[in-house]
Length: 89
Image 1 (cartoon, rainbow, N blue to C red):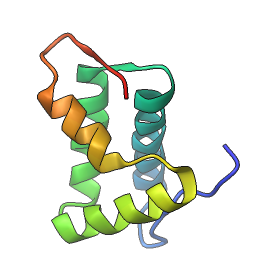
Image 2 (tube, one colour; image 1 turned 60 degrees about the horizontal axis):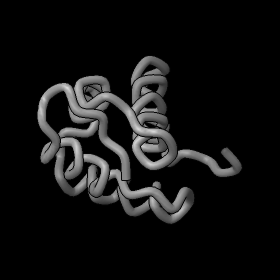
Image 3 (cartoon, rainbow, N blue to C red; image 1 turned 45 degrees about the horizontal axis):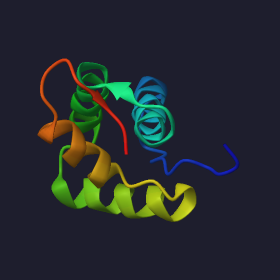
């Protein structure tokens, strides 16, 4: 990783760790694939930290600008996948 993740300085250390885990899960979707359940677990925790759709869209845009990976596309693929599937874009 040669870029900085978009983070909110108002998040607690635990929240930052959990959001970074979500970003890493998104990277896994693109790079090697990840079990749908593992990804959705990371996404559910992310939504506890960033509950608003506007906040999620803002983070998706910022993350895609620095990484080239879309959190939106990864989430969409996970929601469309069946339970037990591995998701990969």
